Amino acid sequence: MTTPQHSEAPWWGDHLLAGQPGDAVWARAEATVTWAELRERVERSAGMFAAQGIGHGSSVALRLPPSLTGIWSLMALWSLGAQVQLLDHRLKTSEVQRILDLCEPRHYVHVTDDAATAQFRDECEVYVEWRRRGRNARSDHCLVQFSSGSTGRPKVIGRTSRSLRAELQAFSRLEGMPRPGERVLLLNSTIHSFGLIGGVLHALNTGATVVFTSRLQPDALLRTLVEENIDVLFGVPFHFDLLSRVVIPPPLPRLRLAVSGGEGLPPQVHQRFLERYGIRVGQAYGTTETGIIATDLAGELGPPAVGRVVPGVRTRVDGGELRIGLDRSPYLQEQGTDRYHDGWLNSRDLAEFDAADGALRITGRSDSLVAVGGLKVDLLEVEHALATHPAVREVVVVQGDGIEAHVGAPDGLSVTELLAFARERLSNFKIPRRVHIVPSLPRTDNGKLLRTAELLRAGHAAGRPLGATRASRALTGEKG
Image (cartoon, rainbow, N blue to C red):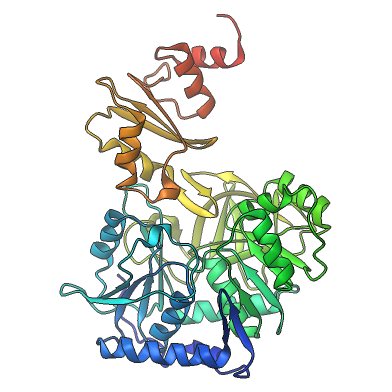
C-alpha cells in the first residue's frame, strides 16, 4: 500500500445527498425511493456501521448483490470516512479470499445467501464481519477497485475523493449527459466505473432519477423503457444487441440518448439499433485506473471510434499503445505497477487518433485482457486457474467465439470435470464458453504453443500436434 496520508473528511459526497427536494424521486426499482428516503437510509446504515466500529480511516470490503442497499451502504460508509474496497458480487469464494488476504480490510460487509446468481433487488440483509487480522486504511483512497491479474493476483486500484470529484465535473460538462429530472435506465454494473460514476454518482450530482430492473429479456426491457418514460439508456453492447434484434419494437418517443460502455461496440449493433429505433448508440470509453477518457455520447462518430478525449484528460499514443497522464500511480499493490512510468499509465489498448476529426480509435489489446459483457477478463488468469488441475499438462486460453480453452491432458479429462473445477475457482463470466481437450496441443516449429484460435482449431481437426506452417495450411485448405 502507499504511504498513509490524511483523508478528506467529511466525505465530499455528502453534498450530493442534500441538494434535492425530499419528495423528488431518486430511484425506481420494484419500489420508488425519494430523496428523503435515500437520506434516511444512508443515515440509518451509517449508524449501524458506526455501531460495528467503522469510522474515519476504517478499511471495509463491501460485497453486496446489485441492489439499492448496495448503493446506500456505499454512501453510508463514505459518509463515515471509511475506505471502501468494492468487490464484485459474482466472485467465487476463493477469489474473494485472495482479495481479503491481499488487502486485509478491517471489516467485511456482505450477504450470506448466494449473491453470485442474484438479479437486481431493492434490499438485502447486510452482515458486518470484523476481521481480527485486518488493518485500517493505509492510504488516502476512498474507493478501491480490482481488475483481473495474469498471475491470479488482482490489480488493486485506488481512487481518491479528488479524482472522483474531477471525473464528476468532467461528466457534468459533457453535452448530452443526463439532466435534472430526467429518467435514466441504468443497466451497467454499479460497482464498475461507468455505472458507478457516470451512472449513480452523476445522477446524484445532477438530480436525475435512476431506474433499475432485473428483467433483461428484450420484451421486458422495452416495457421498462416505455412504462418508466426513460430519457436515457446506459448499458453494455450485450444490452444493445438484445434490443436491436427485436423485429418490430414499440416507439420510444422519450428516449433521447443511448450510451454503451465497458467494451467496444460492434459496428453491426450500432447500425441495427439505429435502424430499429432511429437513435445512434453513443460510447463512453475509460478504464478502472483512470475513469472516463473519451466519449461519443451522441454516436455521431460510430465504432471503431470511441469518441474524442474528454477535456482535462491527457493522452498520447506511444508505440501504438494509448497512455493516459496521471499525477500518481493508481496501483496500491505491486501487481500492475509496471504499467505506470513518469506520470503516464499504459492502458495496453492499441489506439490511433484520426487526423481529420481527432477521434480516438481503439483497435485491440497489446496484452491478454479481453472484455466479456462489459467485464474485464485476463486470459492468463483463466489459464493459471485451469493449469492447477492435476490432469492438465498444458493449456492455452484465447478469445475466439467467446473465451476458448484449449487443454492438453494426455491421461484423459472430461469437459464436465474441468468446468466443474473451474467454477470453484473463477467467476462465472470468466468460465470458457468452449473447451477443447486433446492429448497434446499444437505447437510452432520451434516448440512454442500456438495462441491463435483458428490455428488451434485447425490443429485439433488434424488430429495431431502441428507446426505453424502445417496448421496454416490446414486452415486455408492448401496442400503441402
